[in-house]
Amino acid sequence: MKITNKQIKIAQASNRLRNKRSGAYVSFEGWIRNHNEGRHVRRLEYEVYEPIAIKEGENIIDEAKKKFDIHHASCIHRSGLLDIGECAVWVGVSSSHRKDAFEACKFIIDEVKSRLPIWKKEYYENGDSGWVNCETCSSS
Amino acid sequence: MSKLIEVSYFAVFREKAGRDSETFNTKSETVLDLFSEIKKIHGFGEPQGHCKVAINNDLVQWDAKIEDGDKVLFFPPVSGG
Image (cartoon, rainbow over all chains, first blue to last red):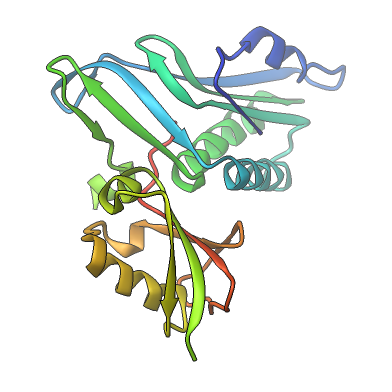
């Protein structure tokens, strides 16, 4: 688990998951989109409390390794200001077969989104800004 | 018995409190008691069930006991990814 305020180097990160036992590699990239709930988004800012985000992220990866038959898994999340189109989060998983890699990748991104102390603030075209509600809050 | 607790806020909590941390002299027994005390002061309206709390950098349940000198971190609903 890594937090960075610089562009995520995806090719470099995915290469670290390569190994001779793996026949599958599945990844997820979360990108910054230019709209949310009907509003035009200009840019986005992530606030991260790193000591717990890293510890909890490592816990999630350990849980994925116990739950699924995978070889390696990794996650990188951005902090700070990001522009539209940038990659905000990357998850990569390698395994012998694709099924476990797909399932573990989904498990990791879902848990990262709901458990890590990370908050995003949207900056809108009209000059306003606002903290984004978590998905579980808005659906309840 | 009253305890001295350092409390830290993040994101929307920090903006509502107007500060990133402060010290409380409190008789609260648990983090939930302390949160109830603080949310009235700063007007935190976020549902407690969607918030998280940590003591000394470890995530804990809302019934966790606080002790004199603890550093308590209150996290509003998260929105990573």
